[in-house]
Amino acid sequence: RRPLPVLDQERVIVLWGEAGGSMRTLPLTPQHFERFRNEARTLQEDAGTLSIDSWAQPVRDGEQTFRVNLSTVTGNFFVVLGSRAVLGRTLVPDDDHPGAVPVAVLSYSLWRGQFAGNPAVLGRRLELRNSRVVTVVGVAPAGLEYPTGTEIWVPFANLSAVEVMPLGRLSSQATAQEAAAELRASFEREPKSEWRG
Image (tube, rainbow, N blue to C red; front, side):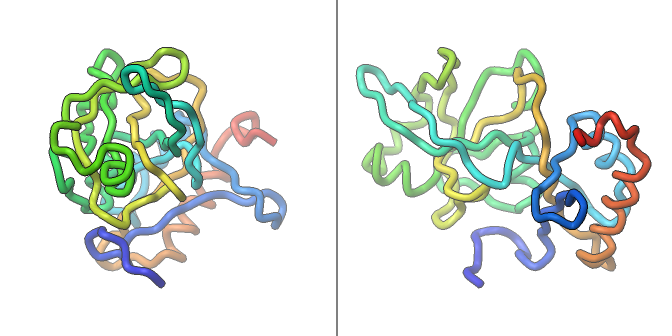
């Protein structure tokens, strides 16, 4: 297992539901995620991502357009991981509210490759799909590319109809199996209409 640039990696877990024993991952609705977040006793804190994988999309930087793997995450994503920026800052909970200035964090590899490791990348404005413009506020540590392959992280803010895959930091005495059981119980309390089949 490759170590990640996160604090106490063995205490960080990713959770999802399974449908009928299949490996098809079941995310939570945003409402279910918030309920689980408020009720969870096995996790010190939990964050969320839109998916366990990143999504390729075009990004416009001035006159240049290139493709990157983007992930949408909750504002406390880097806080839960315990990952600090190597340049600037990471996302924070205040970035994840409607009306917040749209911001982004670059992966170390994207910063070194696409932007030649230039510190002046901070403050740069990039145009994402649907003409959404984000301002670069930081660069993540080398080796952090979660969800899989991520090159740019943006907060959930101002998005609608999203699904959430939870990840969290285990409480000091809790195990991953106990956290999974807690999520399973949370699924069972949900109205069936919110299970998405």
